[in-house]
Length: 194
Image 1 (cartoon, rainbow, N blue to C red):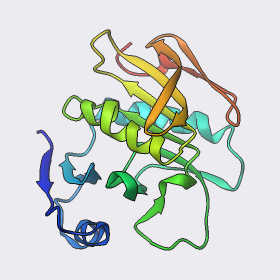
Image 2: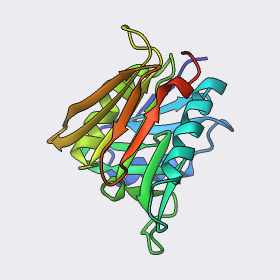
Image 3: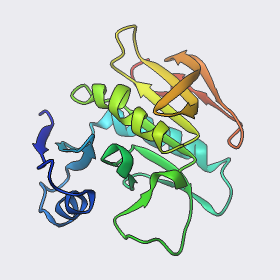
């Protein structure tokens, strides 16, 4: 099953688009995002996709401060890029007082993690990192199971405008280090597909 896109009226405001995203009844179990102003409905991630995200999440919990959390289905808003994105993982401080119950501003995130699916790899490689960088999220980890050169994990950082600089990359089976504040080495040999 592939993703479904719903284009919005360019005359609509960001608030109208978000309201439509929040109030529409979407297929149960689907992942609904706004990517570059287009509402995208994707099927739930596959088993191996979830195993990778779970293994990264487990490792992150061993190094993050008590007042931070690793979120699996939290939407982050990037209005400047017409984006309401749901990364596979978001690491952010816990905030008691947020303006919206459905999402947080992307600028609160310290790290976002995307694991590609065959049907939406392009979003994870191009559109979403541009939005994450524009929002100033310090680190972006792309676990690309479908990379042309083979399964690869790449850490991006130092956002400038809507572009990240690649910091390090590892083929599945190699180690990948996340810098401070995480100071964590991920063993990609733990990921399915090695």
